[in-house]
Image 1 (tube, helix red, strand yellow):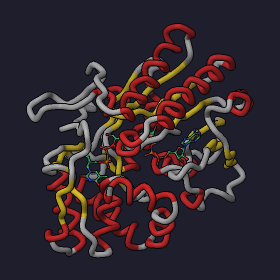
Image 2 (cartoon, rainbow, N blue to C red):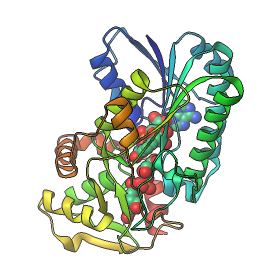
Image 3 (cartoon, rainbow, N blue to C red):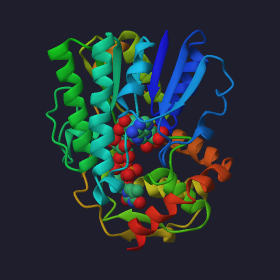
Length: 334
Ligand code: NAD
Ligand code: DAU
């Protein structure tokens, strides 16, 4: 099989490529990535010499390029996106362009050449749960509450509309919060681990009572593999973590404990505007129809992630230089 992976130099896309090349030796992958601040070819060092792997630097909004690449593959796995909520609050332009118009460009090419399309999406499209609400599942109505999740919701709607209107062969997965190696240190877990390793304070938004359902990135990638191999065309699958619903404050204390640091490093800062209270996923459909379930528990996954960051300090330092430093100052010091 020939795959076009978009956004394969980012956190989850690079895990997908490393995993796929290890488990599907015969397949060929082309990785189309614009290498924005979040894209890093260092994440793909272990596959770059593989003759079945090919990198193309480019934009998913570039119609000619996208049509050329899609023509030659069997399957498109679409990760490319602007992915950080706080950045979408500061400026949503790139989110609407990449997440909506980029997806539309890919869908037009998929429609033209009759290819299979898997769309990687998020649980944030469902909005925010109260403490006693049932977890999100495939029948939960869409109710996005920030520009990032609104743009991802728009892209999901477009993908379904191309299936219904034009008959494209698509699947969608909506996954909860990922964490693990190569996670860009602007997101909570890698930011907090990096800060704690240097005895810096960790900025907990608001009261720290918000809840997320954390999934180890390899479990997410295994879920996408299961959807590609066993999912039904036209269907959506929700993927979530293994007993991993915790408040941000509880999770922060776990990271502090595992790193042997002091809770005095917790700093409560101004809350995120429109901060979603709780996300949680019911993955019963994926379990029943695909035989998939998450395997890595939260404490084990956090320990692996800490071990990885401790042995990849230069990787994190390089991510945190340049453009990222400007963003960090704007987000936390203005
Ligand atoms: P990321 O920000 O780490 O990586 C995004 C990648 O897309 C980068 O390599 C970037 O260079 C590339 N990219 C951005 N704009 C592009 C464009 N116009 N053309 C080509 N490439 C472009 O993101 P991630 O955390 O790996 O998320 C990947 C996907 O998974 C996204 O679609 C995101 O919405 C979804 N998702 C993420 C999570 C999570 O917790 N991180 C959870 C569920 C779903
Ligand atoms: O649920 C899936 C989503 O998870 C993905 O679609 C997004 O791409 C991904 O970024 C992630 O979104 P979140 O906003 O939930 O993740 P983030 O790591 O930014 O924040 C996790 C929680 O931690 C959230 O409640 C906000 C809080 N937080 C975050 C940062 C960066 C803090 O308290 N302090 C911080 O400095």
